[in-house]
Length: 456
Image (tube, rainbow, N blue to C red; front, side, top):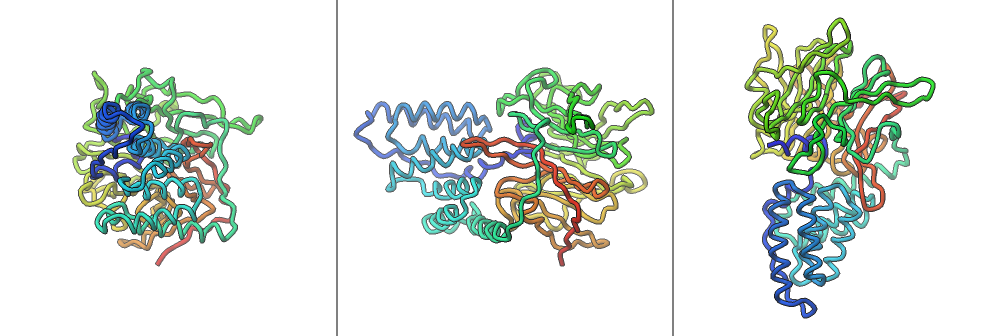
């Protein structure tokens, strides 16, 4: 399905934990008529269906209509809070979650404490987050607390407090000339740092259409050029010849020479898809002698591209080892990194890496020599959400993943880390919170003096 493609980059990411949420009965309220309460419940059920289909904006309209019908009930604001959190609007999620607690304590769904904890966590209010996580641990069943990974969330909060107590400033800097109100992510530097490819969902996307699932514009790949005089990125364009389709397009890797690339394409939401993809598939492309990119070509290997999500591929400089993300083992772990090597110039059998967790691993970036793999995970102790880690490859085995700490990571989702030692910089993606709303933006980090940490 097309909606799964964007889940890799955004994250987006918060609503799946509620798929097993028990139904709730609206408590009686004398200020609302029985008819209004009944109509509100119908609207909420409709909204929940849309929510679990990934149609978050449509779901939000139904929940708001339900709240208008029954303004004194807690169930509608509970679901408004869930939806706002899934949309990345953590301040709004916190506001509505707090309001539904204030309206009822007796029949309230106890998972609201987990939601309050996550919202406080994303807003950087760690002590308040810990209070709510501990309430969730106390009030939820042992099984449900385990399913929601409450213990890990508490561990992440405590880890974040320790990192922040070090007093080391986060080194990333937002790029004003690139970031807009639309999501920007998947930055790739090339041409000695003078060109930058990235992905966005702007209203000038190829074909000008929206994804029917999440009501956002389809993805396109963009290119920006560094302007020495202005000391800023400009000449931003998505008119890149044959690269962009009318579906989802995201470039994840460019070779050090700048002439080979890996990208993810998903055209399953198109009425007349071209090219045809099974879901989200990994493609390759090369530059000609005339500096033009070739038409992207799907990798013809059934252990790489399947009917599940595959994307965010990265490769060693020699082109013999590739890492990518897939959810094909979703019954055991939500999203994993897999590795595949070439055998006689053809790709062999892909296998999962040993450091995957039951949570989600995403956006890998391998150093050109293949010695280090940077990636993001929400299943390891970190500061919250996705954190960036690095793991060392030791021959045929792997070391222990190491968190890059508070100089790189934040209490929000941190992904798409790419390290360029020759430029003494890195690029990454994170959330910028502004009041009740948040946006996905590209950041640059000064990595002068950085030494890659190694685990055991």
